[in-house]
Length: 351
Image (cartoon, rainbow, N blue to C red):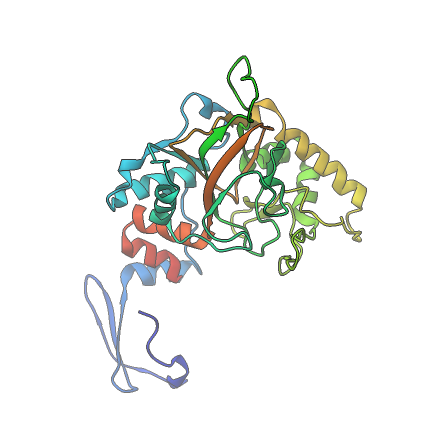
């Protein structure tokens, strides 16, 4: 329920008529309408000494390269029929490690993939549609619809609220008609993941000035390649956004192809930003930062788009990919409600 009374109808000089206490808390009867309020001792003790609730204690597991040996994986049948324990597992894995695989997903049609995403939350509609199912045919003016290699990047940097989760499922990959198979039988198209939080921590340790520049200089971002579509966020944003309470990196926004012109500011010159971005780019491309994996039919990849950047190697042939975006707030809500008691959640979000 929402608040169901008018806060401003309460008299400014309201006074208590009666105060009672027990082992659970404090009950007060007020002189206006004899209204009774109850405050738990936990609530009162907390706000006597603090103005807000602490941040959730998330045990982030930084770095992604070590996942080659033990990638975080959940089985499809753990999510169905309507098993919240499986949803708790996959959302908490993504929260801590940045990504997760769901194995054993049917791939004769894309419908099972859509159902997997909807077990987490609503699929986000964008100018690409909602749930996507595409081949490299340039149906949209975006490099995702090609077969070229893509460096590690964040999707939807041009939204005020970039996509929270993103998912890919390769339903099929066919060789070009009439072509001879390669010696290793591979067609390319390996997926790349880079933990942006880990990369930002490394940058901070190795070059604090570069880190500072990438957290302060705000850039324009845009999507304007398709006719009738020009999307840009409500304001300019830096590559690395810090949480105002923890001071830690809260969101990575990095796609050099969607970036606008680097502005001149009184504190940071464009050449300083480029030097910082060059260092950042060098870190992202280190072998120990990269996790390469070949997507296969039956395995869905879901990752935190605010944290984990993705890319791919070039490929040949016709590859069919399906997936979608999920809003950050919906993802976090589902994570909370499947991993924590209801009262603990309410205590945190109410204040």
